[in-house]
Length: 558
Image (spheres, rainbow, N blue to C red):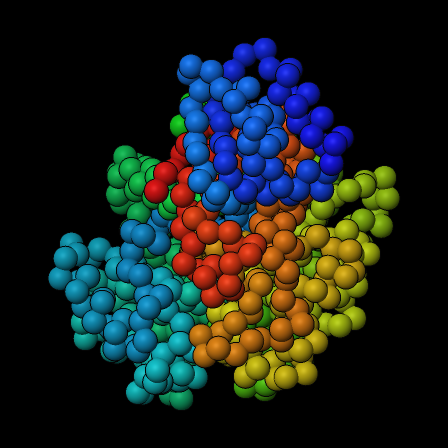
């Protein structure tokens, strides 16, 4: 204790000039084992220059120092969103929010209201519906999904596309099917399914890669709009995403896959000092584009980094698109969908390892995880000279018992989302049955015991981007009905906090600059209204973000 105190005071004595910002009179959890808790922190420029007891704070304060009295509140390293879709967070706010819909009729009513305000031929866009959360199945339905005729009645001339909460299915109306050229004779695309009724007519439900046929029709519509209009819409989405992220305590956002066109826009914003938070990106483009551009796009910076490549080997459990080793319990004729061809992902892996990128593969089902780990292991063995690669499995939700140890053995990072566990749990047993669910569903503790570093996030806009909601799910695994989903896999509160700070920094090769509060690191700090490490569990969701500080600047204040 004396040595630690001497270190704090010595650091303060080294100040040649006062700090720009001082936070004092708080409980500051540093995530640094050498000094886990302090009361005050000093910042000069964008870096932390000292930490210590509140009695030392006066030494750091000058006439121009901004001083924030925490009044005993909790300050932590800034939350890092470990897996989300950055522009998608803003785009979600620009369309219909379907997350709270409790029946299909609720959604039809929302579309009807939107049509009244839409221009002729304008696309009606929404996201967030989930058939497992409806209080009753639509009538009529196929596999619990409605028929597009119900949408056609309220929107006969405006195409409608409503994205599933998971992002792995879409529901469209007849006008959208017409524009996309989808007929009863249209075959399923590779890695996707056009759901049809008993007569062979498309219902409007498009699983996985089948949504691509609608994307092309929408792209034709967008191409007719001016470049200025399209850019203005992207700029609006980016602003909304930044505003919402900062308001929820996020200082860094790891984007789970964007095209080069989006990367270009964000890079220019970073170069022009217009980004108010830090963004780390995965490029999601075909292999030919990757091969031609990887070296040019690789960027390492404090505010903007591109060093990941994204692929998706399967879909989502909710839409029965997750790729399983055995058939679905509630759909025994299907084992899910393989979306990106493993042979193509192997080519991506070779490109990634040659150009020093992290390969980040979306894998949810147990077969998807096994195939991904096989690709990683084969690539690592072919390049024994490459060390500390930190390749990532994005989601890693359902894993065979045989494959759980491989994460630790291979040094592969499972980038998981605590809130997915509690959102999905009501239908996990239906899809997988109890044996598979207990063996490998959201097995945070089992993975950590292998030595794997588990990251955390929300997959926003699949879920709300709130770290506090995902933190609560990680430590409670509590469902709305009060039951707890396999409680032995819960994280401790410190494990959950680490998963959202230092672990996520490690997963991006950024642990030397962020993820903990230490001298010389970036001054990214989140201040909370309550101590989420000690308050009763059910009070966590009632906690507010008080300040979000990025690089020593207050970017959000409640």
